[in-house]
Image 1 (cartoon, rainbow, N blue to C red):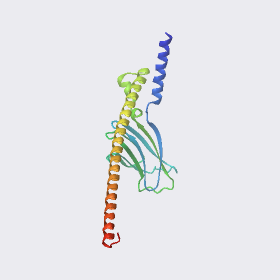
Image 2: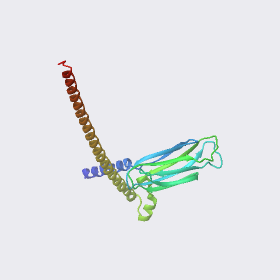
Image 3: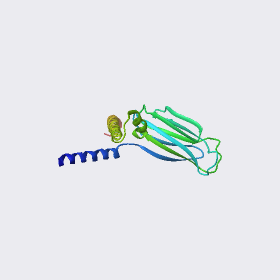
Image 4: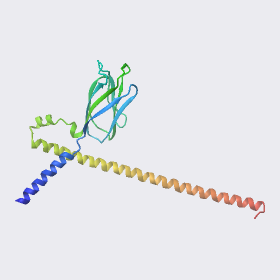
Length: 216
Protein backbone atom coordinates (compact mmCIF):
# COMPACT_ATOMS: atom_id res chain seq x y z
CA UNK A 1 0.00 0.00 0.00
CA UNK A 2 2.80 2.37 0.93
CA UNK A 3 4.66 1.45 -2.24
CA UNK A 4 1.60 2.25 -4.39
CA UNK A 5 1.10 5.62 -2.68
CA UNK A 6 4.79 6.41 -3.18
CA UNK A 7 4.50 5.54 -6.87
CA UNK A 8 1.46 7.81 -7.22
CA UNK A 9 3.32 10.67 -5.53
CA UNK A 10 6.31 10.19 -7.84
CA UNK A 11 3.97 10.12 -10.87
CA UNK A 12 2.31 13.39 -9.88
CA UNK A 13 5.71 14.98 -9.26
CA UNK A 14 6.76 13.86 -12.74
CA UNK A 15 3.58 15.37 -14.21
CA UNK A 16 4.19 18.65 -12.36
CA UNK A 17 7.82 18.77 -13.48
CA UNK A 18 6.87 18.17 -17.11
CA UNK A 19 4.19 20.87 -16.95
CA UNK A 20 6.72 23.33 -15.56
CA UNK A 21 9.51 22.40 -17.96
CA UNK A 22 7.38 21.93 -21.07
CA UNK A 23 8.23 24.35 -23.89
CA UNK A 24 5.56 27.05 -23.71
CA UNK A 25 7.41 29.79 -25.48
CA UNK A 26 5.73 33.04 -24.63
CA UNK A 27 7.02 36.40 -23.52
CA UNK A 28 7.02 40.15 -23.96
CA UNK A 29 9.57 41.74 -26.27
CA UNK A 30 10.53 45.42 -26.23
CA UNK A 31 11.95 46.96 -29.38
CA UNK A 32 13.32 50.51 -29.60
CA UNK A 33 12.72 51.79 -33.10
CA UNK A 34 15.23 54.19 -34.64
CA UNK A 35 13.97 57.25 -36.50
CA UNK A 36 15.32 55.71 -39.68
CA UNK A 37 16.04 52.10 -40.42
CA UNK A 38 14.42 48.82 -39.48
CA UNK A 39 14.36 46.81 -36.26
CA UNK A 40 13.78 43.07 -36.51
CA UNK A 41 13.31 40.12 -34.21
CA UNK A 42 13.75 36.51 -35.32
CA UNK A 43 13.03 33.08 -33.92
CA UNK A 44 14.04 29.59 -35.00
CA UNK A 45 10.81 27.60 -35.42
CA UNK A 46 10.24 24.20 -36.91
CA UNK A 47 7.42 23.11 -39.20
CA UNK A 48 3.69 23.01 -38.32
CA UNK A 49 3.84 25.30 -35.27
CA UNK A 50 1.24 27.95 -34.39
CA UNK A 51 2.63 31.47 -33.90
CA UNK A 52 0.62 34.35 -32.41
CA UNK A 53 1.83 37.88 -31.69
CA UNK A 54 0.26 41.14 -30.50
CA UNK A 55 2.12 44.42 -30.69
CA UNK A 56 1.48 48.06 -29.82
CA UNK A 57 3.45 51.27 -30.44
CA UNK A 58 4.47 53.36 -27.44
CA UNK A 59 5.79 56.91 -27.85
CA UNK A 60 8.37 58.12 -25.33
CA UNK A 61 7.05 61.70 -25.40
CA UNK A 62 3.40 60.53 -25.30
CA UNK A 63 2.35 62.54 -28.33
CA UNK A 64 -1.18 62.27 -29.73
CA UNK A 65 -2.00 60.81 -32.09
CA UNK A 66 0.51 57.99 -31.66
CA UNK A 67 3.01 57.83 -34.56
CA UNK A 68 2.40 55.02 -37.00
CA UNK A 69 4.73 52.24 -38.09
CA UNK A 70 4.91 49.49 -40.69
CA UNK A 71 5.30 45.79 -39.94
CA UNK A 72 6.34 42.80 -42.00
CA UNK A 73 6.76 39.11 -41.18
CA UNK A 74 8.66 36.79 -43.51
CA UNK A 75 9.33 33.07 -43.59
CA UNK A 76 12.80 31.45 -43.81
CA UNK A 77 12.46 31.36 -47.62
CA UNK A 78 11.45 35.03 -47.86
CA UNK A 79 7.69 34.59 -48.25
CA UNK A 80 5.67 37.47 -46.80
CA UNK A 81 3.28 36.15 -44.15
CA UNK A 82 2.06 39.51 -42.82
CA UNK A 83 2.42 43.15 -43.84
CA UNK A 84 0.72 46.29 -42.54
CA UNK A 85 1.41 50.01 -42.93
CA UNK A 86 0.36 53.15 -41.03
CA UNK A 87 -0.64 51.29 -37.87
CA UNK A 88 -0.21 51.82 -34.14
CA UNK A 89 -1.06 48.28 -33.05
CA UNK A 90 -1.82 44.94 -34.59
CA UNK A 91 -1.83 41.17 -34.40
CA UNK A 92 -0.59 38.42 -36.65
CA UNK A 93 -1.03 34.67 -36.48
CA UNK A 94 0.10 31.86 -38.74
CA UNK A 95 1.05 28.21 -38.77
CA UNK A 96 4.57 27.57 -39.96
CA UNK A 97 5.03 25.60 -43.17
CA UNK A 98 8.81 25.92 -43.30
CA UNK A 99 11.45 25.13 -40.71
CA UNK A 100 13.93 27.89 -40.03
CA UNK A 101 14.27 31.48 -38.84
CA UNK A 102 11.08 33.58 -39.00
CA UNK A 103 11.66 37.33 -39.11
CA UNK A 104 9.37 40.14 -37.86
CA UNK A 105 10.51 43.64 -38.86
CA UNK A 106 9.19 47.07 -37.88
CA UNK A 107 10.04 50.57 -39.06
CA UNK A 108 8.75 54.08 -38.49
CA UNK A 109 6.63 55.61 -41.23
CA UNK A 110 8.08 58.56 -43.08
CA UNK A 111 5.59 61.08 -41.67
CA UNK A 112 6.98 60.87 -38.12
CA UNK A 113 8.65 64.12 -37.05
CA UNK A 114 8.69 63.79 -33.25
CA UNK A 115 11.73 64.23 -31.04
CA UNK A 116 11.08 61.31 -28.70
CA UNK A 117 11.80 57.70 -29.46
CA UNK A 118 9.34 54.98 -30.32
CA UNK A 119 9.08 51.56 -28.74
CA UNK A 120 7.13 48.44 -29.56
CA UNK A 121 5.75 46.14 -26.92
CA UNK A 122 5.17 42.75 -28.52
CA UNK A 123 3.86 39.56 -26.95
CA UNK A 124 5.22 36.60 -28.90
CA UNK A 125 3.58 33.20 -28.38
CA UNK A 126 4.57 29.91 -29.97
CA UNK A 127 3.13 26.42 -29.84
CA UNK A 128 1.17 25.57 -26.70
CA UNK A 129 1.28 29.16 -25.43
CA UNK A 130 -0.47 30.36 -28.61
CA UNK A 131 -3.39 27.96 -28.23
CA UNK A 132 -6.72 29.26 -26.92
CA UNK A 133 -7.26 26.80 -24.08
CA UNK A 134 -10.45 28.52 -22.92
CA UNK A 135 -12.07 27.77 -26.27
CA UNK A 136 -10.79 24.20 -26.14
CA UNK A 137 -12.24 23.75 -22.65
CA UNK A 138 -15.63 25.12 -23.70
CA UNK A 139 -15.73 23.10 -26.91
CA UNK A 140 -14.71 19.78 -25.38
CA UNK A 141 -16.41 20.51 -22.01
CA UNK A 142 -13.36 19.79 -19.92
CA UNK A 143 -11.93 21.60 -16.92
CA UNK A 144 -9.65 21.21 -13.94
CA UNK A 145 -7.45 18.13 -14.02
CA UNK A 146 -8.76 17.05 -17.43
CA UNK A 147 -7.72 20.37 -18.94
CA UNK A 148 -4.29 20.18 -17.34
CA UNK A 149 -3.86 16.63 -18.63
CA UNK A 150 -4.82 17.85 -22.10
CA UNK A 151 -2.16 20.54 -21.82
CA UNK A 152 0.29 17.89 -20.65
CA UNK A 153 -0.55 15.76 -23.69
CA UNK A 154 0.10 18.73 -25.98
CA UNK A 155 3.35 19.42 -24.14
CA UNK A 156 4.52 15.82 -24.59
CA UNK A 157 3.67 15.97 -28.31
CA UNK A 158 5.57 19.25 -28.60
CA UNK A 159 8.61 17.78 -26.86
CA UNK A 160 8.46 14.75 -29.16
CA UNK A 161 8.22 16.97 -32.26
CA UNK A 162 11.13 19.09 -31.02
CA UNK A 163 13.24 15.97 -30.52
CA UNK A 164 12.42 14.75 -34.03
CA UNK A 165 13.24 18.21 -35.42
CA UNK A 166 16.56 18.32 -33.57
CA UNK A 167 17.39 14.81 -34.74
CA UNK A 168 16.65 15.80 -38.33
CA UNK A 169 18.75 18.96 -38.05
CA UNK A 170 21.58 16.94 -36.51
CA UNK A 171 21.47 14.49 -39.42
CA UNK A 172 21.50 17.37 -41.92
CA UNK A 173 24.43 19.06 -40.19
CA UNK A 174 26.31 15.75 -39.99
CA UNK A 175 25.78 15.18 -43.70
CA UNK A 176 26.94 18.71 -44.48
CA UNK A 177 29.97 18.28 -42.21
CA UNK A 178 30.92 14.99 -43.85
CA UNK A 179 30.53 16.49 -47.33
CA UNK A 180 32.67 19.48 -46.32
CA UNK A 181 35.36 17.24 -44.85
CA UNK A 182 35.39 15.18 -48.05
CA UNK A 183 35.80 18.31 -50.18
CA UNK A 184 38.58 19.61 -47.93
CA UNK A 185 40.40 16.26 -48.07
CA UNK A 186 40.00 16.11 -51.86
CA UNK A 187 41.28 19.68 -52.22
CA UNK A 188 44.26 18.90 -49.98
CA UNK A 189 45.08 15.79 -52.03
CA UNK A 190 44.82 17.75 -55.28
CA UNK A 191 47.02 20.51 -53.86
CA UNK A 192 49.62 17.97 -52.73
CA UNK A 193 49.56 16.23 -56.12
CA UNK A 194 50.02 19.53 -57.96
CA UNK A 195 52.91 20.49 -55.67
CA UNK A 196 54.62 17.13 -56.31
CA UNK A 197 54.16 17.46 -60.08
CA UNK A 198 55.47 21.05 -60.11
CA UNK A 199 58.45 20.11 -57.94
CA UNK A 200 59.26 17.15 -60.21
CA UNK A 201 59.07 19.34 -63.32
CA UNK A 202 61.32 21.92 -61.69
CA UNK A 203 63.90 19.26 -60.81
CA UNK A 204 63.85 17.84 -64.34
CA UNK A 205 64.18 21.31 -65.85
CA UNK A 206 67.10 22.23 -63.61
CA UNK A 207 68.79 18.90 -64.32
CA UNK A 208 68.53 19.43 -68.10
CA UNK A 209 69.73 23.02 -67.71
CA UNK A 210 72.80 22.02 -65.75
CA UNK A 211 73.51 19.15 -68.14
CA UNK A 212 73.26 21.53 -71.07
CA UNK A 213 75.68 23.93 -69.42
CA UNK A 214 77.92 20.93 -68.58
CA UNK A 215 77.83 21.79 -64.93
CA UNK A 216 77.00 18.25 -63.93
